[in-house]
Image: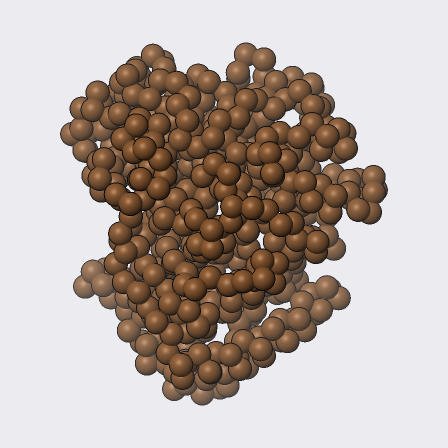
Length: 516
């Protein structure tokens, strides 16, 4: 069994030992802002554990699998979400992954030293943009009594593991995103905590992904119907387990995950830190393996916004015929030529981890010609924009590692679109391989569960037995030529659009905490 806790929803999935999905239950959840603290995104521990418990019961009921036949269970989650506990193991504070209430704390960190962020990055691979350091400092400054009660801090997937087993621990692939890990030793670094004036005694034991943590507790067994014989196994962060779920674990392997955010991941068995602090460096879920990561903000959310805002007719047809809005629009967008008649979008910028800002969202260079510039054109331009940002991020990583992958695996919801897969291949000018199991994060968690239960010898053994590919897309030379010219224009246009936002004439789509 795998529990996959994303930003917008949580899923419980049962797989057989061949890696085939038998049953899935899913529920959306929301993370609300505390009106007292702008930018906050609280994680409701009590409500959300009840959602998970209900999904486990639903999955057991629907699958008709005897709970005693579930060998093991592992967890994965959105990264950066943290949970704080007191001496008794009670959760006393938690936030979701894009909580941004800690602007003042970032300013205060910069006051310690102009170079403090880059110094920490060179040890941890993380900056203050998404990490836990400013958030825990916020608790220290605004909720001092809560801060004084902290016994441990964990990530969200570790919290689910704790609720299942009553054992508090952290695994490196998500734990490293706190910014409090030494990336090379894959362990907490008390020197970092000391440097930023955080306590040095709140960091629990670490276990590598695939390690047995314990068994399902009697309490959780009574609440869910799970067996106390079921092993609870250390899981990992969503992107890293997504890589496991598509077989991206060896030197030079690369993947793109197309969801609400798009992540580009490049795998390595050694770490060379970027002096410019431009991309993230994470522990992989596989021991002694790391990943360079570059993130594109919101491609999936942009497409969802466009769907929900402009497709009333298509929604009616979906209700009448069963053909999804996305399927309808893909047919129409196929008739739009590569390059969308020269129209471009400004949504996510390429990653700059040390100064991460996005221009105001917009469409540019379209004409008042409804035959050419209609919903289908805008739809295709959104797809092309996601591919341009991904190309910029891939080039950024290439500049650090001085090489480039021969091909890239594409997974996640966006990879279900044939057109989007082909656009990504054409823009990157690389073969794009699509796995049979596109929602690979949960499969990665199931592989961890299988390793812990000794169904698989190790990650290589599991991937050999479980991972299969459905299709490979090859770049069209003519389309690539069009996209190369348009990509170069996009880079210059984006720089100008970012200047407009920086000057206050437009409003940034997103800025990292502490940036103006």
